[in-house]
Amino acid sequence: MSQKKIVLREDEMPTQWYNICPDIPNGLQPPLDPGTKEPVAPEKLAAIFPMGLLEQEMSPNRWIDIPEEIREVYKIWRPAPLVRAYKLEQALGTKAKIYYKNEGVSPNGSHKPNSAVAQAYFNKREGITRLATETGAGQWGSALCFATSKFGLDCKVYMVRVSFDQKPYRKTMMQTFNGTVVASPSPDTNTGRAFLEKDPNTPGSLGIAISEAIEDAATNDGTNYALGSVLNHVILHQTIVGLEAKKQMEIAGDYPDVVVGCCGGGSNFAGLAVPFVADALEGKKTRFVGVEPASCPTMTKGRLAYDFGDTGQTTPLLQMHTLGHDFVSPGIHAGGLRYHGMAPIVSALVREKIIEPVSVHQLETFEAGVLFARTEGIIPAPETCHAIRGAIIEATRELNEPKTILFNLSGHGLLDLSAYEQYFNGELHDYEYPAAAIEESMKHLPQL
Image 1 (cartoon, rainbow, N blue to C red):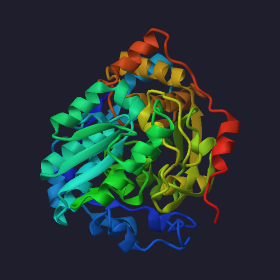
Image 2 (image 1 turned 180 degrees about the vertical axis):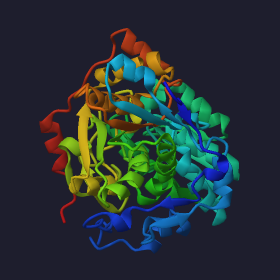
Image 3 (image 1 turned 120 degrees about the vertical axis):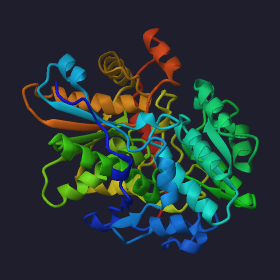
C-alpha cells in the first residue's frame, strides 16, 4: 500500500465554481411558467430566491467566483480528503483501484453544506432574515440550519414524515443549530392541511414538503425558499467536490475511468462528476454512472418531460426525468433519494448518453454499506450505500481489469443506525415500484 489519504491545503481550495450549463451538448431547456407555458421571467422567481442565486441559475459563464465569506466557512471542513479504498479492493479481489471523496467530514456529515452555506450567504447579503426548506432524510435540513446559524438567519424545515419518524436525531441536529423542524405534511400550511385531510396517515414526500416550504416563503415577510438539490445553482456549488477531486487525483498520479454517485435530485453526483465531464467533452475516456433506488427509478423508468418540481404544482415547469409530481415513493431508508424528478443538468447528460443510469435494490445497498464499514471503517449513509454498490458492481464486473473508479461518499450513516439495526434484524425489504403505478402518475404530467 502507498498513500491512503490525499488532503489539500486550505490555500489549494478552489476559488471558483464550475458551471457546466454552457458546455452541455444541445443545451438545457428553460424552465417554463406553468400558466403561460413560456420561459419563466427571473423577476417571478425573485419572490422566493435572491438575485445572486438567480444570476447563477441562469449564468452563461463557465466559472463563477466563490466569495471569501463562503470560503471561510468552508474551511471548517474543506478541503475534504480523497481516500484510496485499499481494504475494500482486497475484500473484492479486484485489480480495480477505488477512490472515494469523503464528504462525510462536514459539520452535518454530508455534502449538503457546500450549497447550504452559499445559499445562506447570498440570502443574508440581500437582507433576508429567514429561510424555509424541505428535507428528506434530514441531511439538507441540518446543513441549512448549520449554514443559517453561521450567518444569523432563522430556518424552518419541513421534513418528510416517514423520515421525521425514522431519523429522530436529524431533528435534534437541526434544533442544535437553532432550526425549527416539523413533519410534512404539517398543519402549518394550507398545502399540508389539504394533504392531511386527504390522507391523515400519508408518509409524505419531498414533493409535498417542497410545496409547504414554498408556501411558507411566499406568505411570510423576510423569508425566502432554499432548495437542496435539482436546481443549476445547487449543482454549481457542489462542483467544489469534483474540482478538489481533480487536484487530488493528479497528486495521486491517477485519473478515473469511471465516476460513480448516488442519485436522488442529482446534486452530490453532479457535483463530483461534472468537472470530469468537462474533460470527457474534450475527449477523455471516462464513464459516468448514476445509481438510483429501484423503488424511485427516476432515470431508468421515468420520462424526460416538463413537470412540476413539487406535488402542489407551485413551481415552474422543469424539463427533467420524472416519475410524475404525484409520485410517492415507498419508505426506504435512503430518504434523500425519494424524489420524483432528476436535476435538469443530470437529465440532459442522460439524454446525451454521457451519464449511464442504473437502479439497485435496498438490501444489496445495505450489504455494500456493511462491507464498506467493515473494510474501510466508515458507516455510510443509506443514500451513499447506493454509490458504494455502484462502485462494487464496476470493480467486480471484470476482476482483472485494472481500471480506476472514483465515487462520492456523500455522507456518513451515524444518525442512520436504526436503518442498519432493521437490516441486521431482517426487517428491511426490497421495493420494485409497479410499472402500472408509474404509468398512472405519468398521466398527470402537464400538457404542453
